Image 1 (cartoon, rainbow, N blue to C red):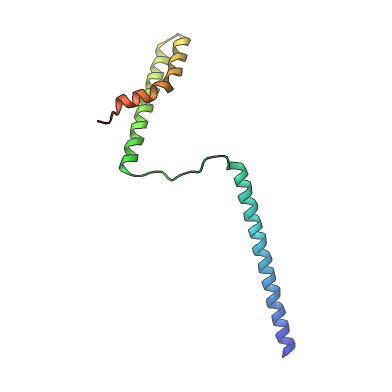
Image 2: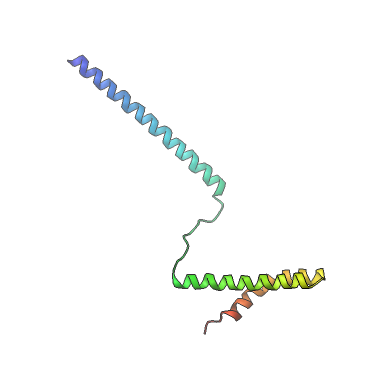
Length: 109
């Protein structure tokens, strides 16, 4: 009886040791993967969930409208003007004019 009990205990201990080794391997893989991901994208800012409220929706719509207006203006100048200097000037002034245009279009009163 005691030999049988000892054999069962040895079997349980062997199974527990195998399970512990498998858990350790899995944890090591997880740790290596996290370390690899951190090295790969650690320098990027953390992603935040997208805001879904009324104000956020309005802000996205306003920014999209401003962007569309600027792209249309650039496209019009690009296709109607033959001067490369004017095209490049409008392209260079666009980022500077974007906040001004946004303020003029969507003034908060």
